[in-house]
Image (spheres, rainbow, N blue to C red):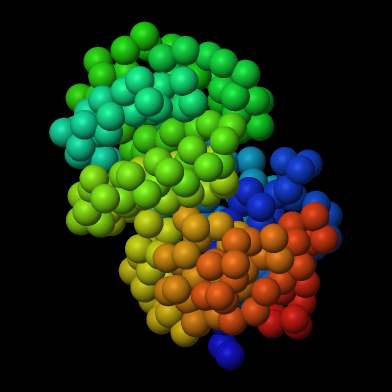
Length: 271
């Protein structure tokens, strides 16, 4: 297989509990780059939160953030693409998440102009801010900033069963043509514009920026927000601790992130 582009997820893929790229993964990526094959990042994280990973692996490519809603080149600052959630749908979703049956269990994050807006700070928000390196902006009523066109809406909670229930409910409430709904972890439920997926973003990078076809692309991910880019790529790799539904889409399942699975995948397929 003639792989000419590798795209990797961040959390659960190149970054595990340490919240950093381990030396074996960094070296494996550097080896691939030395062969003239670029390695890009596609993450659900904010652009400013993902920048340090982009720098850590010394990527030469535009950075795909917010599950594909934001594509920007850190080298020259060029914003290739930004597809925010339509204001009317964002308002409807935030209103829904404010309802009594959800409010005790969920914290709502609104991402606007690469900044994080919350209505209050709890322990989850503190942990999230620490891991992502982001300081949230507190706005008592998030509905007052909806007109600024959010890039992504995230509902976060401790109980994975609540998140699963939320996904099932909202999947019936909104069509795929209205919102792209996904999860990056068991406790993160995320909504973006329907065209803002990692698959669409990787296709843009491969075909529009680099002039490649999908058969020349290798993608590596670990969760449901990676499904679209795994489905797009000619070579799809799932991490060892990915959900079974994600693994079933992969051509090969790598070891877990804590076992440096990305390094194993790169060494196997791009020796």
